[in-house]
Length: 249
Image 1 (tube, rainbow, N blue to C red):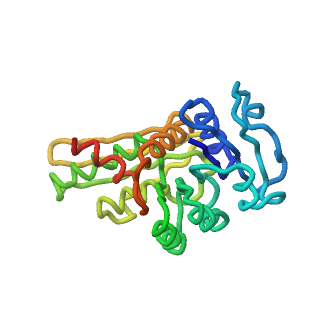
Image 2 (cartoon, rainbow, N blue to C red):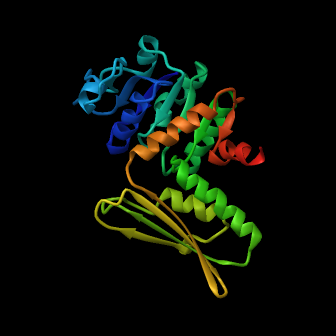
């Protein structure tokens, strides 16, 4: 399965590393804004032994249309910014290239754009694309269904420089019908990402915790999603859509 990756920050690099070590996938290219690494080989830059063709391209020197003509792909994975979808969304859908977006913060405009693209294409979006945190969310919704009156608090911890409230924590709050005031944020050191849900019952407490030890966890999540999008009809999918069939079997 041929893959194009958009975004090459800390998480993008970790995801690229995971893709290149998975024999089911071939990283054809990486596209980023800056020109600094233009035409560098991804495997060489990351120090990974690989025969994959992956080269780093810049939007300053090549358009997405030109790139897809030279290096066609089956899936585009987006770890760039909340506006990145506009640079490739329409052409990807026109070419039936599946889209996997892992952008934490989309505004209503971007979400509506994803819905528009999904009318003619397979589109997946998750603010946190790690398998573990989405399993946590699935379990939390089940527990809330059993005890809808339980007290719930969310604690999200991330690295010192992360701006705003975690998109994952917001998604958890929305899924559990909680006010955003239930989210408690901690910013310290180099914490990759930790989410804890505290369920306060009378005389007992239940805690669900997920911690990303390394950003490679996002790469594992991407691979899981890509494998489970095979054969899907056009539409906008989330992680619950991917996980639910496993619980129905």
